Image (cartoon, rainbow, N blue to C red; front, side):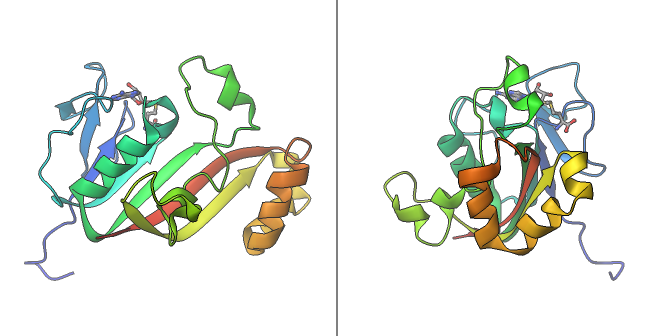
Length: 182
Ligand SMILES: C[S@@+](CC[C@H](N)C(=O)[O-])C[C@H]1O[C@@H](n2cnc3c(N)ncnc32)[C@H](O)[C@@H]1O
């Protein structure tokens, strides 16, 4: 990077006390490390259109009141081509239902409604993201036995796992890397 190149502007929503170094942190909790105290359930978020190069939402989407509106705001505040990282528990993980502040319990196809053909449900939202990657972490035992590699290497196998096997071979965390399409 040249000396004159600008550092990417990153927004870390629901940053808590683990704010990404160098990012602008947003949280509603004043005891967090947030730079901006705001509520992700109140729209619009206090940022101009396309003012960030990237956004991170780590263990946050499961807390918001409206996933579709939150994703639309993520889409609005990040520039075209910017990257959005979403991390959330898989719905078969212990933590998904254990935490009473979790409103949503998602699987690895839950964001397809913002993808290529909006998962066939284009009336849900006009916001579009390209899916660069989706990675599912499994509980350690299943990872050691190679299941994690299999489902992440073969997308059709991941779908089969979601349909038939995930209540036995349980998931842990889902990570999506998306690119904003405008
Ligand atoms: C499980 S913590 C994750 C914190 C951090 N991202 C991490 O990975 O350590 C969820 C965070 O989201 C914040 N949060 C939840 N709902 C929110 C909302 N509606 N508006 C703003 N922040 C919210 C909480 O205050 C908390 O800091």
